[in-house]
Amino acid sequence: MSTLLIKGGTVVSATGRTAADVLVDGERIVAVLQPGSTLLGHDLAAGVDTVIDATGKYVIPGGIDAHTHMELPFGGTNASDTFESGTIAAAWGGTTSIIDFAVQKYGEAVETGLAAWHDKAGGNCAVDYGFHQIIGGVDEQSLKAMETLVDEGISSYKLFMAYPGVFYSDDAQILKAMQKAAELGLMTMMHAENGPAIDVLAEQLYESGRTAPYFHGIARAWQMEEEATHRAIMLADLTDAPLYVVHVSAKQAVAQLAAARDRGKNVFGETCPQYLYLSLEEQLGAGGEDGFEGAKWVCSTPLRSREEGHQDAMWQGLRTNDLQMVSTDHCPFCMKGQKELGKGDFRAIPNGIGSIEHRMDLLYQGVVTGELTLERWVELTSTTPARMFGLYGTKGVIAPGADADIVVYDPAGHTSIGYPTLPDGSPSGRSHHMNMDHSAWEGYEIDGHVDVVISRGSVLVADEEFHGRAGHGRFLKRGLTQYLT
Ligand code: DUC
Ligand code: ZN
Ligand code: ZN
Image (cartoon, rainbow, N blue to C red):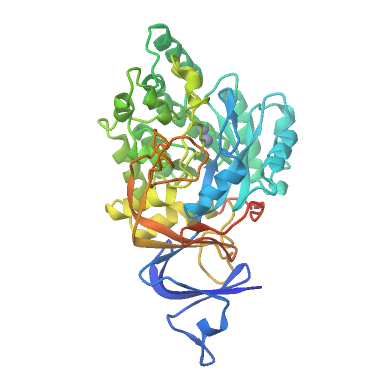
């Protein structure tokens, strides 16, 4: 077992920061020590295998991205990151655990969908991984199968109020699933958009010749998100099921969550970097005569109007704890051969953005601009995901006994995000590691840099090099949420 000392840094937790050295033995943190501590008079650094100098840097728990879709079959194609490429990109960006969504399709057994996800991920991940279970068809069989999820280490499942004919559940199905979830202690995760109404609006827009990517966001109006969020909250209230609303983007949806939380309900909300930074106006202005470049920002829920103040409301919700987490909803598709399926019909553009590599950096910008404290950054990206999804203690904290998932973050560093190559094929000098032929974040200049990434005591990233391997990542059997009031 090798030993490692991270020396001279500032250890940041969800509740404070302190100058400390962190000692790792094998896969675990064994001590958080006053700077320069000795062992019976002996210099600690002399007795360990590896010393990492973190002077002037933050030492934080590894990021946990609780919403990813590796290899998801969706929109007539598959999300372009495999578990291997996506988790390598995660590591580069300081994320040491992911929770992906195993899919049960309508007509298929839950066990079959889950087994397929274990097959895809097993032996291929560079960081630790867990699963939520998508229930794409609520019926007697899948309700019964929910009873085995907790034993499988899967303490959360997801329903969709959108995508009729694909993943959609109607209110009766949602009610039944929530009754079962309340009984079992499962967290219900909800994609809250009124799918049937959206499909009507989308068809009307298409028939009237409004076919560009921008109209994706017009069809998926904020009213569709607010209404579905409210409905989900009411059904959760009735059934006493804890509810976690994924990828919140409309300020009206945040208001619904805040009102429920003010009534003492176990209702939680997640937003994503795209809803903090990107806007519908930018999508409208995005290049090319048909505006097709805007396809890179087609995701659901959609980007919202900056003029209407949705992005500001997301930052505010993160400060006030009306929103508790930032995940990516990482669901990348290439422009070539994938997004371009929707040229001339926005309805056929595969929905999704790739951000897994940039979440820690993008959120750190909130610290730089004063939107968030340093501690809140750690809480949103690591500690709360661990508590929310039954990993806390092992993950989400730098403390003796916890897994040594640690990031050394340099606040004086810089990160440029962009294409691996320029459109003419020449190197751009900027890169990312996600399996995409573009970046939704091209041109973003980040104050701050992920310097060293450690997963269970193994250095995955250091000196701008990847030292990890596919297969290092282990399946995380999660416990029940630790976040109920
Ligand atoms: N939204 C996306 O943008 N992609 C995958 C599924 C989803 O709900
Ligand atoms: Zn969704
Ligand atoms: Zn998603």
